[in-house]
Amino acid sequence: PRKIIIDTDPGQDDAVAILLALASPDEIDVLGIVAVAGNVPLALTEKNTRIICELAGRRDMHVYAGCDKPLKRKLVTAEHVHGKTGLDGPQLPVPTMPLQTIHGVDFIIETLRSEPAGTVTLVPIGPLTNIAAAFEKAPDIKERVEEIVLMGGAYFEVGNITPAAEFNIYVDPEAADIVFNSGVQITVMPLDVTHKALTSAKWIADIKALDTDVGHMVASWTDFFERFDTEKYGSQGAPLHDPCTIAYLINPSLFQGRFINVEIETQSELTLGMTVADWWGVTDRPANAMFMGSVDDAGFFNLLTERLARL
Ligand code: BDR
Ligand code: CA
Image: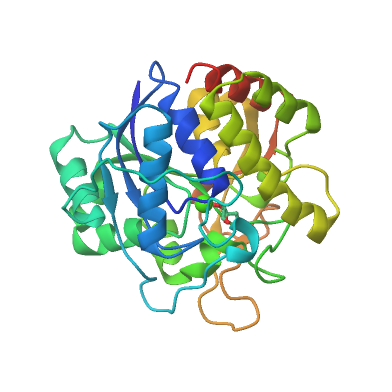
């Protein structure tokens, strides 16, 4: 299995991503999960991460708290999407498994230094603060990363937090800039892909029909999450943004994209956090990211149902 560190700000879709990873031990070995401030503040994202691990029956998982704010900016949160807990929908249990005492950024650094070079993949599904902070503090780890598979950015689908920017990149554009210019191999799941991974009434019914704790929780999370996109965009179904990263690691053939240049806007007030993606190759800037554009959504949801049924 591929060894990964998940960096997350749960978030209902983050929760599904974590569950998918923990349900897939043949393909994925989760070395630890680091929380970051994003959808809601850090005190909630680390707590939510522990709720999700306990739901998956993985009290043994190591959960760390990382950065509580972006590198250079005030935190922007998304309670309007995820609710005030970050995991609104079901009644949430109080987690009792411990939070690890070392800082999440140090866990990332220590893990990359102690595992053989080129064997650990980073999976950031929130703002890129922890990853950038680790690269700044310990530049030697960059060449030890196997790959970064992240959810963030947009091209044709442009913004969901401003007209130009996707939330994860917008919250910490300086961090995103560091990551995209790190020289590490990067695979990106932008809104162009994740807005095609929309839950359907049938899929939610299938998940409920599992009649497990995981099935009921996921159904009520996605029900809650869906109301935002339905009201805002008139689309049916909730976009399962973050699970696309994990699905890619399990079955990359579900996704198609292009290896292109992607730069991050860090200056302009109007387009702050925009992922300027050279999809048509109109510049000679060197390619630095595999930018995905489409997903086999039926294959994606079949995989998700099959894996969630294992928990
Ligand atoms: C991203 O922002 C968050 O609200 C979601 O969890 C996802 O990571 C989508 O723009
Ligand atoms: Ca997220």
